[in-house]
Length: 199
Image (cartoon, helix red, strand yellow):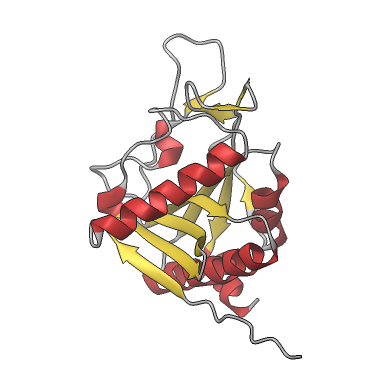
Protein backbone atom coordinates (compact mmCIF):
# COMPACT_ATOMS: atom_id res chain seq x y z
CA UNK A 1 0.00 0.00 0.00
CA UNK A 2 1.45 3.36 -0.96
CA UNK A 3 0.86 6.57 0.83
CA UNK A 4 0.70 10.00 -0.84
CA UNK A 5 2.43 12.60 1.26
CA UNK A 6 0.64 15.90 1.60
CA UNK A 7 2.45 18.72 -0.16
CA UNK A 8 3.01 21.72 2.05
CA UNK A 9 3.16 25.24 0.68
CA UNK A 10 4.43 28.21 2.63
CA UNK A 11 2.15 31.24 2.52
CA UNK A 12 2.85 34.86 3.34
CA UNK A 13 0.91 37.74 4.90
CA UNK A 14 2.27 41.29 4.70
CA UNK A 15 1.25 43.92 7.24
CA UNK A 16 -2.46 44.07 7.97
CA UNK A 17 -3.73 42.17 4.94
CA UNK A 18 -6.07 39.24 5.64
CA UNK A 19 -6.87 40.13 9.28
CA UNK A 20 -8.78 36.88 9.90
CA UNK A 21 -5.87 34.70 8.77
CA UNK A 22 -3.43 36.96 10.64
CA UNK A 23 -5.39 36.38 13.87
CA UNK A 24 -5.46 32.64 13.18
CA UNK A 25 -1.64 32.63 12.87
CA UNK A 26 -1.23 34.63 16.08
CA UNK A 27 -3.57 32.25 17.92
CA UNK A 28 -1.49 29.31 16.66
CA UNK A 29 1.77 30.91 17.88
CA UNK A 30 0.20 31.71 21.27
CA UNK A 31 -0.99 28.11 21.65
CA UNK A 32 2.44 26.68 20.79
CA UNK A 33 4.06 28.98 23.36
CA UNK A 34 1.46 28.15 26.04
CA UNK A 35 1.86 24.41 25.34
CA UNK A 36 5.64 24.80 25.77
CA UNK A 37 5.05 26.23 29.26
CA UNK A 38 5.21 29.97 28.62
CA UNK A 39 2.84 32.42 30.28
CA UNK A 40 1.14 35.25 28.46
CA UNK A 41 2.53 38.75 28.99
CA UNK A 42 1.44 42.09 27.52
CA UNK A 43 5.15 43.06 27.52
CA UNK A 44 5.84 40.25 25.05
CA UNK A 45 2.72 40.68 22.94
CA UNK A 46 3.46 44.04 21.35
CA UNK A 47 1.71 44.62 18.03
CA UNK A 48 4.31 44.70 15.24
CA UNK A 49 1.81 44.05 12.43
CA UNK A 50 2.43 47.22 10.41
CA UNK A 51 6.10 46.32 9.95
CA UNK A 52 5.85 42.54 9.81
CA UNK A 53 5.64 39.82 7.20
CA UNK A 54 4.38 36.45 8.43
CA UNK A 55 5.24 33.10 6.85
CA UNK A 56 3.23 29.99 7.64
CA UNK A 57 2.65 26.44 6.43
CA UNK A 58 -0.76 24.84 6.64
CA UNK A 59 -1.84 21.22 6.35
CA UNK A 60 -5.23 19.50 6.45
CA UNK A 61 -5.18 19.75 10.22
CA UNK A 62 -4.47 23.49 10.25
CA UNK A 63 -1.35 25.61 10.68
CA UNK A 64 1.80 23.56 11.25
CA UNK A 65 4.49 26.27 11.45
CA UNK A 66 4.73 30.05 11.51
CA UNK A 67 7.30 32.81 11.94
CA UNK A 68 7.68 36.46 11.07
CA UNK A 69 10.15 39.10 10.01
CA UNK A 70 9.73 42.53 11.58
CA UNK A 71 11.53 45.26 9.69
CA UNK A 72 13.25 48.04 11.65
CA UNK A 73 12.42 51.66 10.83
CA UNK A 74 13.29 54.87 12.72
CA UNK A 75 9.65 55.11 13.89
CA UNK A 76 9.12 51.60 15.27
CA UNK A 77 10.55 49.09 17.72
CA UNK A 78 11.54 45.49 17.10
CA UNK A 79 11.37 42.80 19.83
CA UNK A 80 15.07 43.25 20.62
CA UNK A 81 14.27 46.85 21.66
CA UNK A 82 11.18 45.96 23.70
CA UNK A 83 12.93 43.39 25.93
CA UNK A 84 14.81 44.57 29.02
CA UNK A 85 18.46 43.83 29.78
CA UNK A 86 19.03 41.72 32.89
CA UNK A 87 20.57 43.76 35.66
CA UNK A 88 19.98 45.52 38.97
CA UNK A 89 19.68 49.03 37.55
CA UNK A 90 16.52 51.00 38.11
CA UNK A 91 14.95 51.95 35.88
CA UNK A 92 15.78 48.85 33.80
CA UNK A 93 17.64 49.36 30.53
CA UNK A 94 16.81 48.47 26.93
CA UNK A 95 18.75 48.49 23.70
CA UNK A 96 17.99 50.97 20.93
CA UNK A 97 18.70 49.74 17.41
CA UNK A 98 19.74 52.68 15.23
CA UNK A 99 21.03 50.62 12.32
CA UNK A 100 19.37 50.80 8.93
CA UNK A 101 18.34 47.92 6.69
CA UNK A 102 17.95 45.41 9.53
CA UNK A 103 15.10 43.21 10.72
CA UNK A 104 14.11 40.86 13.54
CA UNK A 105 13.20 37.18 12.91
CA UNK A 106 10.76 36.22 15.65
CA UNK A 107 7.70 34.27 16.81
CA UNK A 108 9.04 30.97 15.48
CA UNK A 109 6.48 28.28 16.31
CA UNK A 110 5.73 24.81 14.99
CA UNK A 111 3.93 21.59 15.89
CA UNK A 112 6.31 19.15 17.61
CA UNK A 113 6.04 16.18 15.26
CA UNK A 114 7.61 15.05 11.97
CA UNK A 115 5.16 16.98 9.82
CA UNK A 116 5.56 20.09 11.96
CA UNK A 117 9.34 19.79 11.70
CA UNK A 118 9.12 19.55 7.91
CA UNK A 119 6.76 22.55 7.81
CA UNK A 120 9.13 24.53 10.06
CA UNK A 121 12.07 23.81 7.75
CA UNK A 122 10.10 24.89 4.66
CA UNK A 123 8.89 28.03 6.43
CA UNK A 124 12.43 28.80 7.60
CA UNK A 125 13.70 28.53 4.00
CA UNK A 126 10.96 30.82 2.64
CA UNK A 127 11.64 33.34 5.39
CA UNK A 128 15.34 33.29 4.49
CA UNK A 129 14.46 33.80 0.80
CA UNK A 130 12.47 36.86 1.80
CA UNK A 131 15.51 38.21 3.70
CA UNK A 132 17.64 37.63 0.59
CA UNK A 133 15.09 39.47 -1.55
CA UNK A 134 15.00 42.39 0.90
CA UNK A 135 18.81 42.42 1.17
CA UNK A 136 18.96 43.10 4.92
CA UNK A 137 22.44 43.86 6.23
CA UNK A 138 21.62 42.01 9.45
CA UNK A 139 18.73 40.01 10.85
CA UNK A 140 18.42 39.64 14.62
CA UNK A 141 16.63 36.97 16.58
CA UNK A 142 16.17 35.96 20.19
CA UNK A 143 16.18 32.51 21.72
CA UNK A 144 15.70 30.97 25.13
CA UNK A 145 18.67 28.65 25.89
CA UNK A 146 16.32 26.39 27.90
CA UNK A 147 14.49 25.43 24.70
CA UNK A 148 17.06 23.98 22.35
CA UNK A 149 14.94 23.65 19.18
CA UNK A 150 15.19 27.25 17.98
CA UNK A 151 18.76 27.60 19.24
CA UNK A 152 19.80 24.50 17.24
CA UNK A 153 18.22 25.85 14.07
CA UNK A 154 19.88 29.26 14.38
CA UNK A 155 23.38 28.02 15.23
CA UNK A 156 23.35 25.03 12.88
CA UNK A 157 22.84 27.48 10.03
CA UNK A 158 25.69 29.78 11.12
CA UNK A 159 24.03 32.46 13.25
CA UNK A 160 26.23 33.98 15.95
CA UNK A 161 25.44 35.09 19.45
CA UNK A 162 25.40 38.88 19.40
CA UNK A 163 28.36 40.73 20.89
CA UNK A 164 26.65 44.06 20.24
CA UNK A 165 23.39 43.25 22.02
CA UNK A 166 24.45 40.96 24.85
CA UNK A 167 21.93 39.24 27.09
CA UNK A 168 20.37 37.85 28.98
CA UNK A 169 17.21 39.82 28.25
CA UNK A 170 13.64 39.44 29.46
CA UNK A 171 10.05 40.55 29.07
CA UNK A 172 8.34 41.35 32.41
CA UNK A 173 5.78 38.72 33.38
CA UNK A 174 6.89 36.29 30.66
CA UNK A 175 7.69 33.01 32.39
CA UNK A 176 8.61 29.50 31.27
CA UNK A 177 7.31 26.80 33.61
CA UNK A 178 7.04 29.29 36.46
CA UNK A 179 10.52 30.80 36.05
CA UNK A 180 11.56 34.03 34.35
CA UNK A 181 12.37 33.50 30.66
CA UNK A 182 15.83 34.71 29.74
CA UNK A 183 16.73 35.35 26.12
CA UNK A 184 19.95 35.75 24.17
CA UNK A 185 20.24 37.68 20.91
CA UNK A 186 21.57 36.13 17.70
CA UNK A 187 22.87 37.84 14.59
CA UNK A 188 22.12 36.35 11.19
CA UNK A 189 24.31 38.10 8.65
CA UNK A 190 23.83 38.21 4.89
CA UNK A 191 26.27 35.36 4.33
CA UNK A 192 24.25 33.14 6.67
CA UNK A 193 20.70 33.78 5.52
CA UNK A 194 21.75 33.62 1.85
CA UNK A 195 22.83 29.99 2.44
CA UNK A 196 19.58 28.95 4.14
CA UNK A 197 17.40 28.61 1.00
CA UNK A 198 19.95 26.14 -0.41
CA UNK A 199 19.69 23.76 2.58
